[in-house]
Each structure stands twice: as structure tokens, then as C-alpha cells.
Length: 344
Image 1: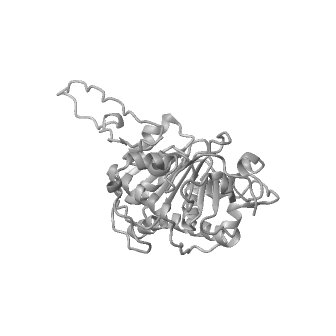
Image 2 (image 1 turned 90 degrees about the horizontal axis):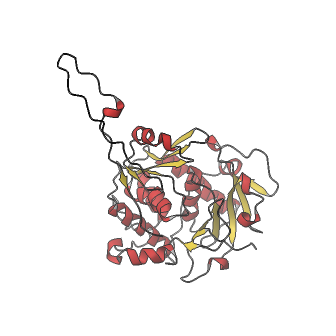
Image 3 (image 1 turned 60 degrees about the vertical axis):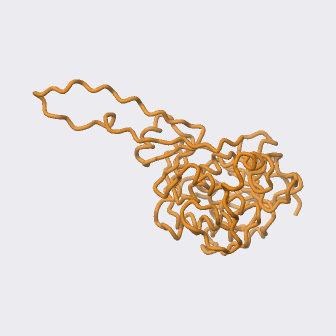
């Protein structure tokens, strides 16, 4: 199958090019822990000794299947979607089966994901890793050449231009953009509407993700992950431990998955720690404080920062008046940690 090359960009996993070149320099090898042998059982907590990304998800399902894994907000549409570990796992399995059975993707082939921060983007990423594919992440709206390839199974030093994608996941607005879809790859379009809605209208030669995915089975057995994906899982475990993430943590992010903070802080490190993610698209800054309180956010890993308001000085107590109930502004402001990978 012929296709145009991936946009030039950094590689986000074990080929140690670009971003992971920086990670190799910044993260001591001993801090990553020993790599797991393929098929070895994963230990609990934020340990890095798991075989691959699919093992991280499987461990999260075993630990607490019903607890929210990802809560998605889109402040432009008012959408709020909460997905448990089981629900995410079902979507990932269906999408992995779509990749293999409908698109014929095999381990080592490249899948391009040109989608914004969204819960379905996380699903497609996890599914592509589950089948052992390379993952090229191209942020919508970025200039050609600014994409990021999260390459799985690529030999060290391989240029992303040598590995054209066999499948491209895009928004329905981008199906005609040659800079995104290329030429010759299978195109799968997502509406990104609430409740996983279908495309507004069929597009010739384009698969409607919502129409195709639900017919596939919700069980998938991943192949052995490539060595660089095992490195990616170890790095996720490293950040989970460095940030001291626990199952009780809820990490808010607005970053795209084409950035280190978005990839690790908004998906992989919380997954490794058994934590939860609150993913916000089109975040309204005026809603941030309330969202942190309502969603019990404990950490932020995103360009967005949260500086809690300073406590208002209380008036001297009047002994002639009964005490009044606390107002929301007077209640203790939750402590929110700011996380960053420190990678360019």
C-alpha cells in the first residue's frame, strides 16, 4: 500500500530520537527500573516493569474496573463524558480489532493520528499501541512538518519519512486535507461529537469510525510489544513515581498527545499509577477553579496553570452574632500540584 510520508517530526518512544533522546539524557537508566520480559506479570503501583502499554491498561482494569479512568470536557460544546477503565478497555479492544480486521494493520506498520485532545484520541492511541503499530501523532492545525511521530517498532535512526502510514485517523473537517491524510492510506474519520456520533454525512472513500467500530468485538489479545514500546511503558512508570502519583490522584490536562506533557501527564503516567485523567478541550479559564473542585483534581500537567485565590481576611468575630456557615470562598482551597516532564 503506497502513501505519502509522515510529517517530519520528533519520535516519542524507544528509538531515542528527538523527545526520547532528551529523555535518555534527562532520566537516569537506573531510575527506569529493569525492563520486563515479554509476558511477565506486572507488579502493582507505579512500577515500570510492565511489558507494554496494553499491559498498563490491563493492570488498571484488574485493579479497579469501574472507577473513572478518563473524564473528558469540551467547553465549546458543553460535553462531559466520563469513562471507566472497563469502558475504555472495551473501546480500545473494538478499535484494535478494527485496525487488524478491517484495515489489515500489522505490528510494525504506521498509523497516523491527526486528532485533537479528546477521549477518542486516547482510545485510538491505546489501540494502535495494542496492535504493535507505529503511531504518528500530527496535531490538527499544525503546519506540515510540525507533527510528532510516536514510532513503535522502528529501528534506531530510521527517518519517519521512510515509514508512510497505512491508516490515518482524522476529524471529519480534515478528510480533504492532503497535508494530513496523505495519499494512499486508509482514512478513518471521527466526528468527535458527543456520544460518539457519526459523521454529518458519508464521505466517499472514508470510513466513519463511529459506524465501523461498534460492530467489532470487545476482546483483543495484543501481540508481544516491540522493545521500544516496553521502554515507553517504563518511562511512563518513571514519571508516575517521580510525580508520586497514586490511584487517588486525578490529573487535569489540556495538552495534546503530540507533546511530552500531554502524552505522559495526560495519559501514560496516570495509567501506570492507576490514577485518573480529566482531559479538557477548549478550556474556559473562568471554569477552571470550579472544575478542579468538582472533579477533585489533585494535579495539573498542561500549559494551563492554576493559582488558587488568596484567602480573604476574615472580619473580627462578633460575639453577638451566631456563627455563619462557611461560604465556598472561605473553605479550604485544595492543593493542586503542577507536573511537567521537562522535555522539549
